[in-house]
Image 1: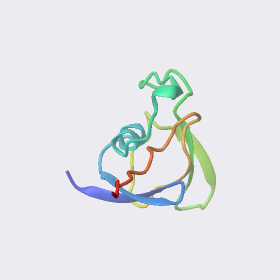
Image 2: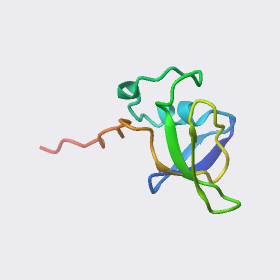
Image 3: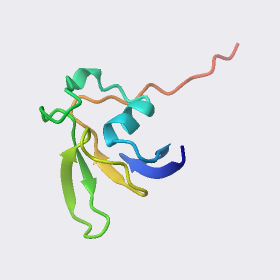
Image 4: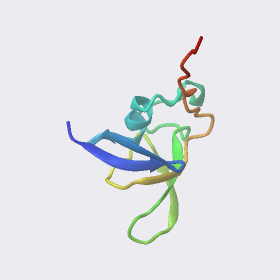
Length: 92
């Protein structure tokens, strides 16, 4: 599956094309468990904020119903979503 570049909270990421934003966030290792998601659009817990590329407007949408697009710029993750801890290497 081809990858596309998106920005999530100022972090450049590569995610599979043709996915929902919610699945892409999950694939990035972002902890969405605390968000209490329904995954089908019934709740509002996966709402995220992004910049609309054509107009530059700041908008919000449900991540489970929104498709990833190249150069998507997400400025706020769903409430309670948590980035994974950076991996550290142990040095003796």
